[in-house]
Image 1 (cartoon, rainbow, N blue to C red):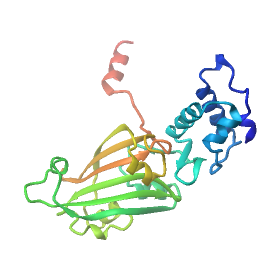
Image 2 (cartoon, helix red, strand yellow; image 1 turned 90 degrees about the vertical axis):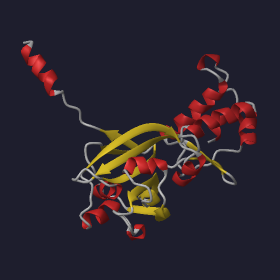
Image 3 (cartoon, one colour; image 1 turned 180 degrees about the vertical axis):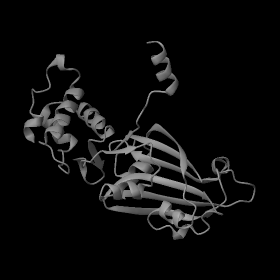
Length: 259
């Protein structure tokens, strides 16, 4: 590893600022496998002595790699190379649960429960679920884990009339709803970019501020009644969402008519 930080390697003015040169060298070492997941980088003071760069420059280069999720800084453990996470592709055209999606891939599934219980609904839950004054809401908050890797922080809210016993949910919410004839048949899902705050980043094992995906889902029964309002934060380094697009029928007709 010492050859990464030899003095005189960061003097090429045409290669950009020195902190960026350091950032690039470490990123390339991670990509090529010279630095493996779990490898520790020298302390900031040692790195400055090895490279001849200032500690401010070292810190700036390292912070950029922490921000991109390639390095992790832990108190007492220093700076280490982040574990590799297999990217998963999920189709947006299918209404499936996290448990079903992971099981279909042959992956081991686990949930780390943060909270389960009945509550007075928030204004957001009242609007999303169409609740009336005095109604109660079941909340399920957990970290969704696949093959030992935390992938998402999820909070599902359901009318208490649908789920009066939130403690009964063990693994799959949708499996439980299906057994009661209450499984949703369609949903509206919104996806937006987000930077993870400290709490969610700690739960997902990444650095605060890294990119994530915020997903809100409102799911409906066949009757049109809302059954579920779920807000999830997914790791940005672990998920790709894919959707199949087809030409609109009107566009196809217009194209044929113009021929």
